[in-house]
Length: 498
Ligand SMILES: Cc1cc2nc3c(=O)[nH]c(=O)nc-3n(C[C@H](O)[C@H](O)[C@H](O)COP(=O)(O)OP(=O)(O)OC[C@H]3O[C@@H](n4cnc5c(N)ncnc54)[C@H](O)[C@@H]3O)c2cc1C
Image (tube, rainbow, N blue to C red; front, side):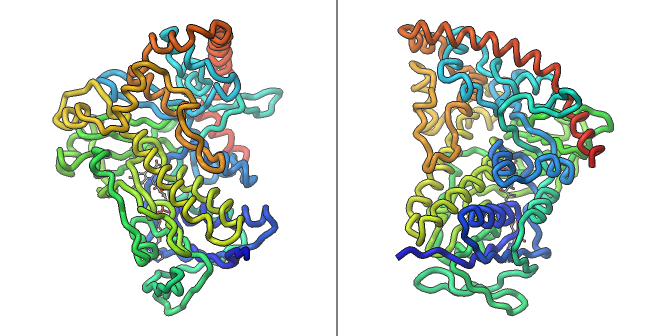
């Protein structure tokens, strides 16, 4: 017999909790079903207060649920993110970008292979690379109308608190309770009742644990945390803000700047830069970390926090009638902004599996989430393959790599990775693939020209077409970038059109 949950209690009103409310309610409506959804959040506890860069999946979500992108940008002071600039990772003084657009989506395979074989940067044929170079938004005016510069989805930088409040306003038909869960009663089928500080009791068919690092619900069901400390080298994050000068251009790119003992993020919103030093306390103390960053920036900083990063994931994110999402289910250093992305993908998967009836999709879900987070971890660790040896941190990190990384290095000696080398993700949902790996491998100097040439050697037609396409795209995108609107001007024009 099929069984669909009808009541859902979401504990936690951070980004994960409100995304869950929106996705589950909207997906249910799309399928002519209804969930009775209650969100319990605690204004006394607040949210994590960081988490400001998304991937393009966030824009897919806005489009999919018909949420107004320009309203989002205007109301939250968000900015457009076209990619990530990796500075000083390969060696001091060097940088490379990871643009988010995927030109092979339009051209078909062969483009990247040709670029590598010809010794050209793979990102040259990315529209977003050219827009990043000139600080442009992916929009231009045509006959006084704003039109997108291409078919690609961009991402955003935002203030987590403002974005959370905006998401909350978009969630319709949701009951909201401002209170704290104080007790959790479990039984053979999972959570039976949660008791709030007010004494109110809540029961539901399905509970979502979105309580961040507290893991208030899932820990009562015996979830185990699998730490990644042996793979990922950093374990603390010190967030702080820097002001954005009046009239200063706003880069449409996250800066991930490698330092002596970790790396620094700089994320522009319309009002300020959200920054943070992600570092290893096995190599420096918090005081030394602060001093190191002040020297690099040439100014004093006021840390907002010093967060212990226990990178890892739950062994099972879905246990009985409880699913952990967001920080309560997994956490990795935010180098590739994988956390909010992961939450959205997990929610889409969860809705699709619930739609099949019963909780039979639990094992499939748990396996997919485990794979998703493990793959993110390995992708992040690859960034630390570096020529740098200028500190004990880099000597420790860049000289020994986990097997997943050495496997990639070995693979790249004879081949350039192609999309077919990355197994598809369940339900066709987005996941790390060649489009993310190639700019990083190329930027780190790990792609082999001879390997690319030999892969194309018996495909002269493909090579010829790819060559022509590459040259056309470079020309076309360079020209498009000069027509697109400077990023700050674009954002100001949205504010004026209120
Ligand atoms: C340093 C750092 C940088 C990051 N950068 C990025 C990034 O650039 N990109 C990205 O995608 N992600 C990033 N993340 C992750 C991102 O912050 C989270 O994925 C996102 O904010 C979701 O958090 P959350 O909702 O799971 O938890 P939180 O924001 O912590 O929310 C938890 C909620 O649970 C509530 N709560 C807790 N206990 C109880 C209780 N007992 N009863 C009732 N309510 C309770 C709280 O009040 C709160 O509403 C970063 C994280 C850190 C730590």
